[in-house]
Amino acid sequence: MRAFSQIRVDLKGWAVTKSAASLEQVFVHDRAICESRSVGPGTRIWAFAHVLPNARIGSGCNISNYVFIENDVILGDEVTIKWGVQICDGVRLGNRVFVGPNVAFTNDMFPRSRQPFKLLMTIVEDGASIGANATILPGLTIGRLAMIGAGAVVTRHVPPGAIVAGNPAVIIGHQDEGGRHDGIARAREGC
Image 1 (cartoon, helix red, strand yellow):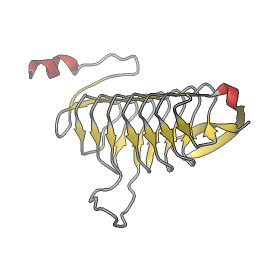
Image 2 (image 1 turned 45 degrees about the vertical axis):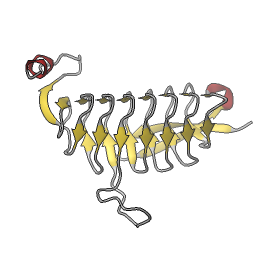
Image 3 (image 1 turned 180 degrees about the horizontal axis):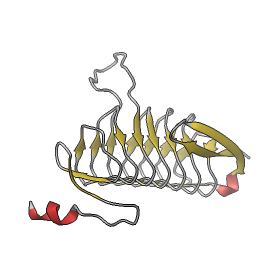
Image 4 (image 1 turned 180 degrees about the vertical axis):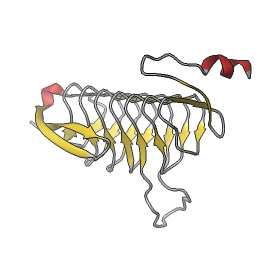
């Protein structure tokens, strides 16, 4: 029996503590590959997902079909990753982050085949949501409770509570902790 570990992530200092969790507390579909031993209890990893050995995943996460998670990745608790997402080295997702289908994270500002590069960290703070098919450029911080619209290309830091959309993504509104927002009506007016 393999032992898994529960991960608690503090985004400010990146302090990580572990407590033992047994394999029975983590669901890994028989067609998924989970090489990491740092997966929190209650996490579900679905078919055709692949989690590399050094990835750290919190408790209560849901990792959907066809997700690929590289080694230098940390997911907080209760994170939802929808299908077709690749999470590259250097990405940090806080607690209760939602990542929609086919979101693209990048970690190299000037990619070239087989060339060394400077790894840039991307931080998505607690409670943020990223819509389907959004692209997140490297080295950025997406603030707490921010919302990224579907198809957005995020090229700059996103402040906490901001709602952004477009290519390049621009702020179209704000929301508070209660989910009240002022940006949706203005976004629809432009359609």
